[in-house]
Image (cartoon, rainbow, N blue to C red; front, side, top):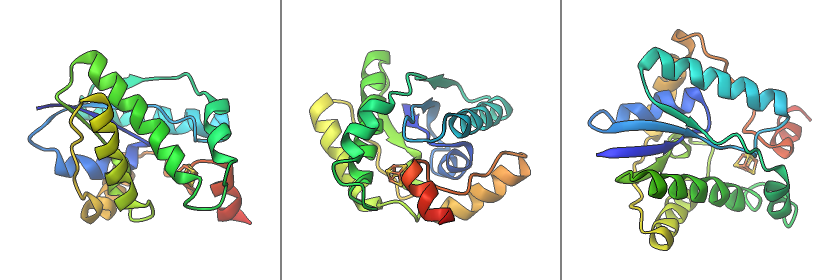
Length: 174
Ligand code: SF4
């Protein structure tokens, strides 16, 4: 199965890969939720390094449409509320890319994190699959989160300290 994996960062891809050993994986980076721009670039470069090390094809949508992200996030910027449109924005973009490029399915590394709203991500994946006709490959990758962190450290990757958006940076360091 050729699968397009929406990828938020290298460490989360490292964990998710443990659940995709029998799949033909392409990573897809589209994350206008990562702020500021320098942090976004740093995470993208770490992912690129990791993909080179593992010989994983990487596609980047570098459009970084901040306006689209904030237009939804500011409607209710509380933790959890802002995350649903953030997930949808990124998953919908991945599904569109998967459809255009003829992948058999799409999924996301967001499913590896115990800090994300796992069930809502699974539901959104199923909804977007219905809308686009591209199968969503659901997997509970959370048991591999810590292993992925260890893999990423061994690979010398940058390890971020907050989820991504400026709200999450504020909550982390306040
Ligand atoms: S906390 Fe993370 S998932 Fe939620 S809106 Fe911010 S970047 Fe997106």
